[in-house]
Amino acid sequence: MTREEASRRYQIPLALLREYESWGMQQGKTQYDNRDLERLSLITALHDLGFNQEETKEYLLLWEQEGTESRRLEILEAKRKSALHEIHRREEQLCRLDCMRHSLRKKQQEK
Image 1 (cartoon, rainbow, N blue to C red):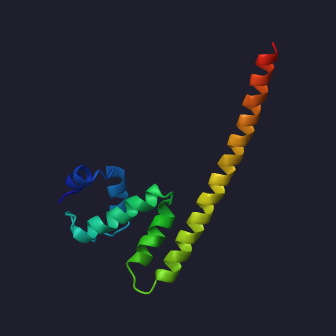
Image 2: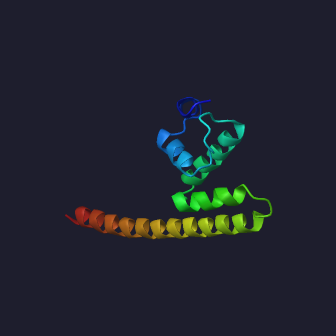
């Protein structure tokens, strides 16, 4: 299947397919096979999880090798920790926003 067909059928952005091809994973092929689609599925999942290009490349290269489960688990654990930190930071922002909203509403009611 061609890049355009893969993009349409699996709803993978063309930019992501070009990025994948730039990593040399295609090895000169112009058609995507099942293994390519499996890699692209993983790449899409990693992007959705917030992995940047370098993190995605590293994880994908490890995924291609046997015996790298421990390192991949470390990467996923670190990404999870980072996501939790971001969630907590956003929760704190919401608390501050709620306090400000509450103060303003209270002032409005006093008028």
